Image (cartoon, rainbow, N blue to C red; front, side, top):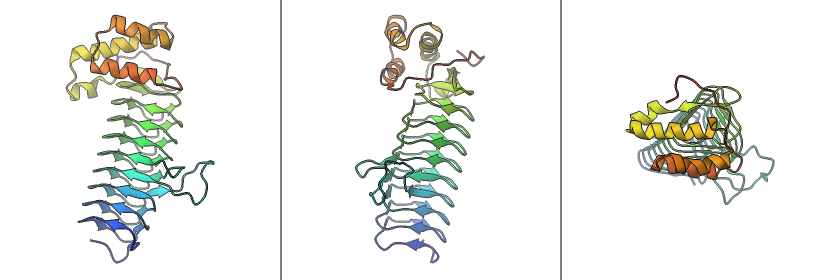
Length: 265
């Protein structure tokens, strides 16, 4: 149902069973898939495409003009959103800086109140982005990672899959997979063992992950030497390959500070 108090441009494309609340605003060229809910006062701006089953809450702005000095006013900007995402109140998702790029939100993400996702960010699938977090331009948030309340992710940073970044962290370098990051400056606090156990990762693999990060963080090796040492000392698995590939692709380095806590495996 579309509220008579909403504005939906005649050139917007809405799928079946889409609900649009009062005073929502949907611009021309927007594509919204089946079974989406656009709540009151939400703004879906030109260049936005979303899949099915998404809920966009009050006062969210999707497809905002990118806050990037390289952006040329009037350049078409894109946001591509997958399926089954919850985009809560007052979230801002900016469009891409260039016409041939896009800000991308995958599937089944939970994006909480007052999150700001800047231009050309790629949020993969099943991520949680906590209240008031800010994800700067061209960053990547990989599958099933959690950004807690007030996290700030710097431009171009990659956040590895199944990682947990604790509240208030300012993240300036890549965060490898399966870790807990906390404090300021952001530091390695151990392996995200609770989540890994929840998804069925064996104790043996979790120990191998922990030992891999011991080599990286406490082994007194350069990052390059640590990458060479790990295959010599740690049995290979998909998870260890994932860590090695991530670290090798870290153009700006990874977070290297560490804090030994009782959460270590």
